Image: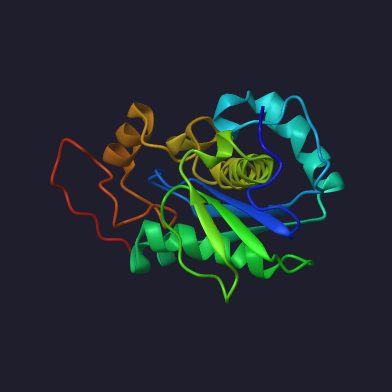
Length: 201
């Protein structure tokens, strides 16, 4: 059973990201403030849910949350500032769009940087412990999947509609055959079995 909040009697936002381990595409993050009495039997860490369950939950979260927002950091920005900083920046961008300012933030994982002067708490595997973080994980995952599906039409060879940019065997084989495109994260190890260096203008 997921917990409703970490800190009582404050406006608490849960944050999580999606796409950190991908070879291509942006990293997405979401911030969600849920009502204190929010309950949902299906809600869980997005990785524990089916795709169908995630997309069923998204409108429920969006309709019942007190506030929610999604932040995005591009592949080019990831290459400049690294994926950890990009993940935190995506969370900050999500938090900055909330229509209700949070008084406390809980973040999935063990790394974060202060957002304005709002107190925060990192929670390892928090998406499986707190409702607001689980809700954020679902929004971040589904919005990122939608984005990868949309750009997959322009680059069908990478099969992003199936792998969403993660380092699958088929994705790496396509990079080896066709080279990378502007959506690939050039600071990542795109190919494991070669020292080929790609240059992309």
